[in-house]
Image 1 (spheres, rainbow, N blue to C red):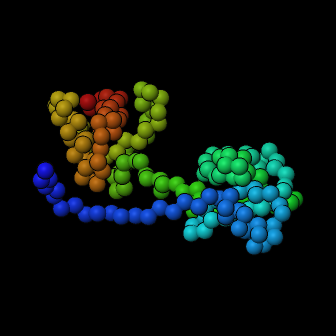
Image 2: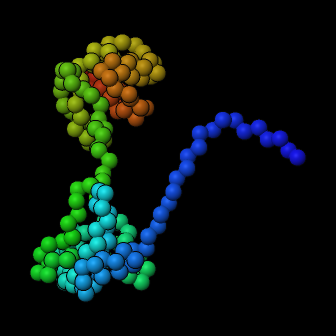
Image 3: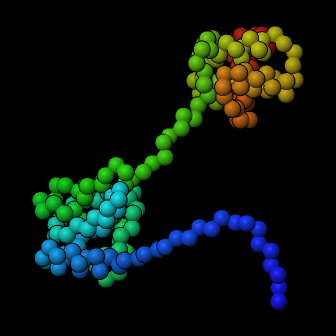
Length: 189
């Protein structure tokens, strides 16, 4: 006989109920006397939506539906993607209504350094052919000072952090090299 010590753990008990779509389809067909073919099955918020009907599916509808990858299981257990499912509207002009919550996207995060409040010294074309903006805080931090490359990188990182940024090595190098190019052209490096 073994004595096993189990530290206190929170238990998570859940119940899973799986209902075949064909069973739902049969129940709905009987209840509403539907003879049309099942076109699509989808989840919209808190409802299962079954669409019945026969219609044509044009190439423009296919283009508009590209990239949608929600799977549905149709009659016979065959899995299909919603981009393969025909619209219900008999005239073929209306696609299956995809509610905005069906295609969720992560909110885009601004992926730029905050430069609000910094005075612009000039705009130049750097050695890579990019048009870059030279900001006054970098120029004043680097102009006429004899520093090593590490000290210059540290000064640029400090300026970026003071404005609420979290600079990475690529951003630090970008602002440093562009400011150094400007100072070299100006003759004050």
